[in-house]
Each structure stands twice: as C-alpha cells, then as structure tokens.
Amino acid sequence: MARLTILIHRGCLSDTAVERLAEDIRHQLPDWTIELIPAELSTESSGLVAFPAFLVDGIVVATGLPEREWLLKRLRAHR
Image (cartoon, rainbow, N blue to C red; front, side):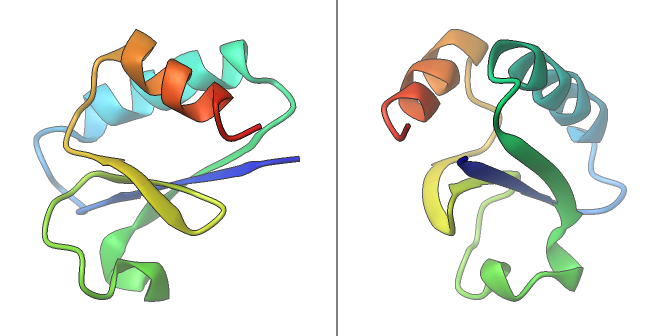
C-alpha cells in the first residue's frame, strides 16, 4: 500500500483547497494511506521551500496546488 503525505503550513490560504484535494484522492485511491501533516512538525520537510508538498513514500512528487487529474496520474504511476 502506498503512502501519500501532504505537508502543509498551518494557517496557509491553501489549507482548505488541499483538504478537499486530499478527500478527492482518498475517493479515487481508497487503498492508499493519505496524511495531511503540518510541515512544521515533519522531519520530511527539511530542505523543502514550497508548500503544500506531496510526497509518495517519502519522495516529493509535486509542490504547490496541482491540478487534481494531473496529480492522480502521477500518483497512479507510483503504484
């Protein structure tokens, strides 16, 4: 089972949009583990300068707020 970690800055304007995107991904990829974690609390955020950051099994696959279908295509490639 793959793990998607989404690192966000607490209080960022994109928080709500990222939460909606995460929920969409959960519906499309129900067998994945998906976590939203404040970047400030994550050791995986070291060296990252753009948030939100999307990591599959610890590897950055996207930053910012990607388009839903593009991101799903990238995630499915990691299965």
